Length: 566
Image 1 (spheres, rainbow, N blue to C red):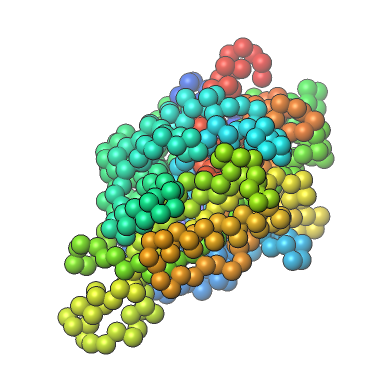
Image 2 (spheres, helix red, strand yellow):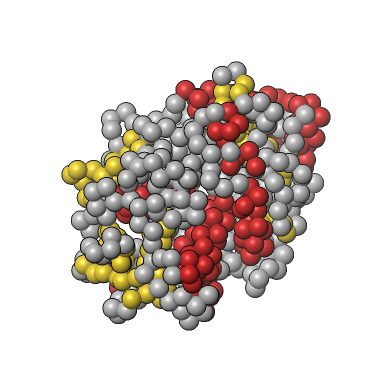
């Protein structure tokens, strides 16, 4: 486990050209772009530096003290433990919930998954990388609800291209407007059960099924080796085959010689010049000593992750960057649910175990593509799935008789060990009453006011939830599945770990917090580059779009700095 005594020393009192808060998917892109262009940048990260020695993807549960179920997780990380990726071998990549509290009103639970280390949640993210489609940028023009994005797909497409080419996204081109094609590496292959599902769903229901598009390289790419299917990705990757800012953008930023990375810096608020009203730095707490410190900079770029970014802005002063009254409001997450069934299609290999291919198949959005509304429902959803054996589950093979070779053969022949799982993610409408604010009493271990999160699913989300699980059930039956089950109730808001909104972008300063380039309307040398700026929550996984937006914002900052506009 990492010790905070290993942190780097504190920086000097230099005035940096730019201060970046957060080192995850977007912070890495900002650091790389600005520092490679010659700007002197300081990147502040609340957690420690991680190295390849901390990766545990090849560590088996039987090698661990508690066989994968450490009491430390339940005791100090009850919220983080709800995430499948948090386990004994990597739980230190998820925050201690006791030291980092947040509150919710009674009856309104919210699952906030957080990571504090260099690289942020790109060490443990799901890696699926879909572009948003043209209609996703103009939802209000399609169905009249909410606000359009202040940019179009055509504006962002060149940045999608550049991010994909650098990151390495594997996938198959399908020619579908709802998931536009991009610059892909060769796709991973479907297994036999997934090919069976694809054929059945396409022929019987007329719905396209494609292979997932993960940010995982399938061939040597930019100095990174091809994925060798070892799994589980969320415990690290010794070959750097999946994308994390830790071994890509941040490495480039440091190589430039223009980027100082400061770990152990728990940021509390943005400081301002009383004469100009502009930001002049960031105040932070030394994680280990609790000493208060400040860093000075000409531009501040906030990349902490959606809710942490908004928390930083809220803690920076009453009404700070909030003349619109929108800061903290319009919180969104994808409403998620699952269904599964037995599809007895076996692999040709005699035994199916490691290596384990990451990712699976995807059924792109098909609802409301040619109309604004269906049966009282706005927007739509996509479904992710995979076909796999449950040989590794003791519950699945408990009734198998035999011993040794006979037992193995009996398990191998069990058809009910082959299950097809579908997970569906639907868009959440932006609502003012889904919001975050500072808790008036609760603070974290460093004395910084915590968030109080108010969020619940609305009628439209619940309609989409029921519809997408009914459709998942129909798809499974179309593929000949038996023992089909579906989730009864949706996960809590936050459960998809796709939190968006609360510092929305827009052209009208009276309705939004940042402009088309994610520049604060009220303080022109403050930028926000993560999911906080999304005006809506299209059903695709959002991280690829965040990175494309961060790249565009970075280049806007460079151009503005050259003109002297900041």
